[in-house]
Length: 69
Image 1: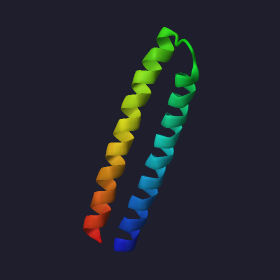
Image 2: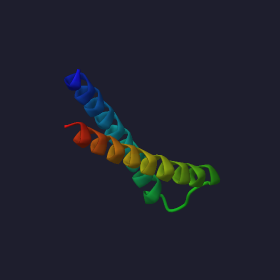
Image 3: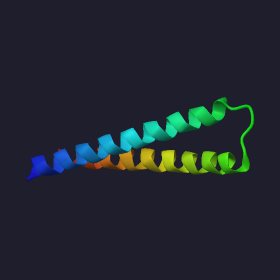
């Protein structure tokens, strides 16, 4: 049972890390542009929030995983 929890937590952390990387990559693409349209500016703000949220979730899951160990 604990192995299943560890596996599930690990998979969720991996998924969130992949999401975080995608957000960071897209943000980098936007940063490289000399000018952002209004939609791109909104996307940039949204991506920053999503990236931070993913990071917070990763942190929480890693601490939950450590507590279960």
